[in-house]
Length: 165
Image (cartoon, rainbow, N blue to C red):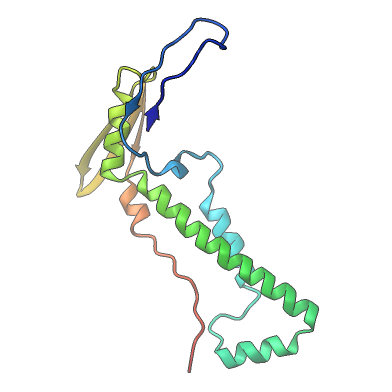
């Protein structure tokens, strides 16, 4: 997270000076996206995969593909390849999302939130409640309380694999 020096001569209104503040790389920006909906993305992948019988052996998949005409086989291949790419992208975005809640990352957020160059104070507190980590992020009078570990680390998604006899 870095604020760089800036030439404000072209800006209208009062001139402001910026100092450079380097707190290190800030992770987990996916968590700040308002339109990130992993459930919707996973549902699309599941609907796409529903077109192929789960648990098929390689021979059964080959026989199934041979029964399709060229156009349908090509369309099925494109859909499944797209589902595979989307699943890979979803896994990466979920890992980035989870990295936001890393202790070191939250420490950086708290450091920035309390820095004199930051005009909107942010407070980050972590504590244990009933054995689980509780994160409180406060902006002015609003406080969001989160218990991310139960959701982030307990939810396991696995990609279907081909069954070999």
